[in-house]
Image (cartoon, rainbow over all chains, first blue to last red; front, side):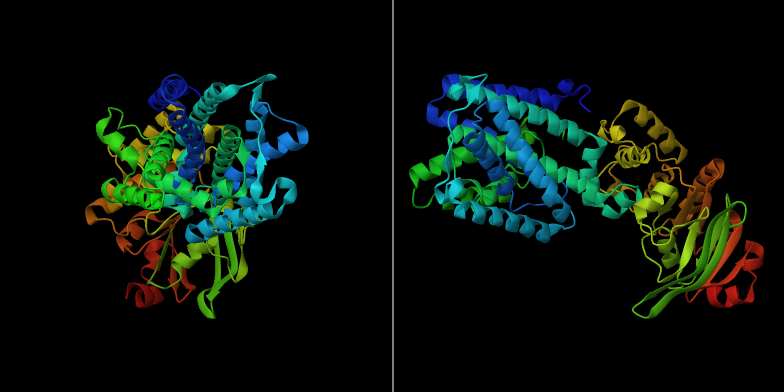
Amino acid sequence: MFKGILKEQTIQVGIGFVFIVVLLGTFILPEWMSNNFMYGLSRGLAVLGLMILWRTNLVSFGHALYYGFGAYAVAMAQKYLGVTDVFLRIIIAITAAGILGFVLGFILRRYREIFFAMLSLAFSMVLYGLLAKAEFLGSTDGMSISPSTMFGFELGRFGLFYFIGFVVILSLIFAHAYLRSSLGHLTTAIMDNEIRVEYLGYSVEKAIHIKYVISACLAGGAGGLMAAALGQVDPDSMVLWSVSGELVFVTIMAGLGNILAPFVGAIFFEFIRTYAYEFAPQAWQMIIGGTLLAIIFFLPGGLWSLFQKINPFKKEKK
Amino acid sequence: MAINEILKTTNLQKSFSGIIAAEDINISVKEGEIIGIIGANGAGKTVFVNMITGYLKPTSGTIEFKGNNITGIKPREATHIGVCRSFQVSQVFMSMTVKQNLMIAMSLAKKSGSQLLKPIDDEILSKECDKILKQYNIIKQKDLIVSTLSQGMRKLLDIAMAVVGEPKILLLDEPTSGVSVEEKFGIMDIVISALKKSGTTVLFVEHDMEIVERYVDRVMAFYQGQIICDAPPKQALKDKKVIQYVLG
């Protein structure tokens, strides 16, 4: 599955991109800008998960379910088990979201189009309702997260940034290996023709289920990283429908052309939001909406299509 | 089941909301036979193919494959046991290249999880794929997106994708429909010679009697959901009922 993957252009460019972002974020840029890079990289994981689903024409309006579940898994592991190790945190976040995705996948894999989208939204709102009411989970105030450690030592902001970069690189490698495989190509095949896939002897529902769990794991990982980066989890900023909406927003804005697109899009989104809020605190949503409209009208393939026009790697699509 | 009998149906019936689409279909097919299924539009040919390959569940009756009851199995289960099909309207992956289409079919045909995880352009599989593309005379088009191909090319690809699963029995639903007159004999020559080599049993639905006469061992003529004639082509095409209800 991973044979020769490091020689692939997409991965080499991806590693270079993450290195530049982490170096800029830790050595050159001021903290507020650096934070945007860190949050963008983290949230980009969830967008990557959505992008993988989207390539089968499945749009989830409720992916904050896994994003929030990953984040709350980190918070609960700290509260009840005292886990602060960053490796354990990310493993817990991914595993918890993966298990939830696996269970709900049995229901969701039977639905397509708007039914899939709305059912996933419904599940996320169920979790939101539970979290908002559950006092032992902090109710609407949420829970605070203590600084992450590695091998018993506090990681610090820079250390966490490096770790996020490391997780993003691993995720890029995994996503690329999956998408270039025959199983990954079933993504497009299912979008084109489900009947044919069944008649080739493979269960479409199974393929969608696998993809859904991968997507849930990525969103859970993103939630875990964001929890560690923000130091706080609460239902409104982690699970509410508007969080799912933002992830869909970034996916459209980024485009589906490449596995790097979600990260570029997520970082871009963080900056747009920061500047919009800074310059027009009463109308920042309008600026964000206008930006999306402009991208849909002038760059229908998303921001990545702009890179494809100007960069020398445009032939490769993975 | 008789020796060498690969497929048998008994009193097979299918109705949709009380309207009977297929009734009392009793057939027996021997291994390696090539059978032409003829009939006017709405005679029940495609319904019959759909029931055998699991797309439709019969209302009553049984389907036996190599002595095992396979009535009502799912399409992918049919594929697993060696009952494969192609479609009246080519069912291929339109946004992918010809080679990617076939590579996916081949990866799935291997029935191994590890093959599915390998890159789609896996070297060994790629060589095998090129051989098949050459055999079906679509090697020159291997890097073209399928939506840009002619109907004839798509039909060939559709059939090639069904064949890579090494079927025991292959049902082709109008393999030459929508194909130009110049292409149709070429396509059938390629397909039938490849299938004869592998000893695959073939049932194909066809409207073109020239094709039927030239390639089949036996003809089954359908009319109003029933088989009105089951005989060698020369005899079947002279049958009074066939002339009246099928050939018009």
